[in-house]
Length: 432
Image (cartoon, rainbow, N blue to C red; front, side, top):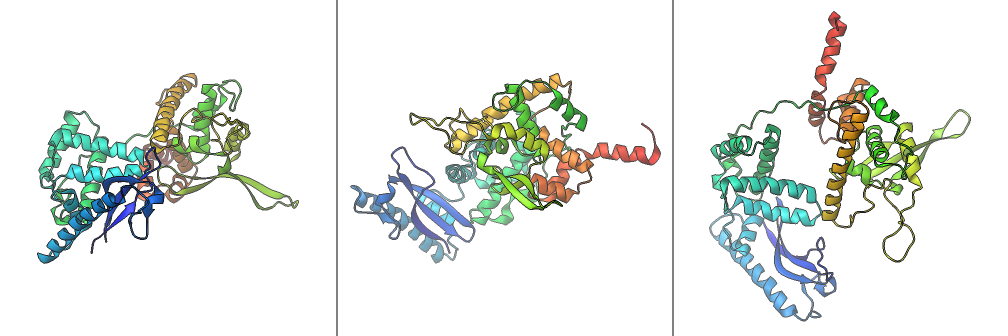
């Protein structure tokens, strides 16, 4: 049975330090949220009573607003029970908003993305809003759920491929996003799962991508380039090379995670004693991955540690007039001049610096006489390929790359398999 409760939404704060009051609609499928249109300071919110305290000048008006919306939800709950239907969180929220809850797929998705954005996942929100913009450009708005049929999806797919010139992989990603939101709507009772258009829809066929990677000789060529001093005082070329090679030697760490590493993420550990009784010291980085939000623990091999050493003692002046230094600075200086205090600011900084790194890597590739495409993500591909060639199992590579399933890793390595098969054929029958 669905429930409705007012909450003070601490994930969002305006410039006055006030939080929005939201209604939380919950059922067995999860929670949905709706703003009542009011902000209050935490000191004026009574969490036990779930109302605005009398200390606020407008407490009566705000509490009356909350009661009005709760009453609208309760009327809908009773109406649904009367006609023998189960009140769902989505149905009660739609009643408060004043819309039929099967109205518009785009509105349903937008409401969910608003909550995700306030929770800080800016990159995901921007990607999925771009997909919804394409869907709206093709199908118009409002876009009722009933219009999402296999035939509609076929026409939208063809339009994306021909009119928008999207790659098949881009289209497949867009279809996946639409399917995820449709399935979520079904879980919330907005539509019936049996009505899903994806039961009879066949997505465009995607060829397995040919993933760019470096050979061990090409890695050595990049490492041998003379860019002057290393470390924080080095040139842009030297620093970007350090970021790239550190990623390679740190299990293919993603760009966003490399540049967000902090000094405190480097941990010294002792793994027993050697034959002379001396402690066996190792260094690791322990950090929270930006994409999956899970914690990773990576051994720093000598190559990775050598890259980090010049950066461990770098001084970063604190901003403002107080002077001093940043207590726990980023290891690398990629984000030093950016405001990363908000999710939006961090996303903008990461996008800008990733583009810069890829631009510099193209210069590095030219100097190392590497003709293939070189971007930061190639470090991740290269690690996976070298690990596979080194005899690692798919399971080992999966653990290192921190993929959510073995099938993802298997698909990741599939682009490298043609070369491995060629080598086996030469070994079996000879030839060049």
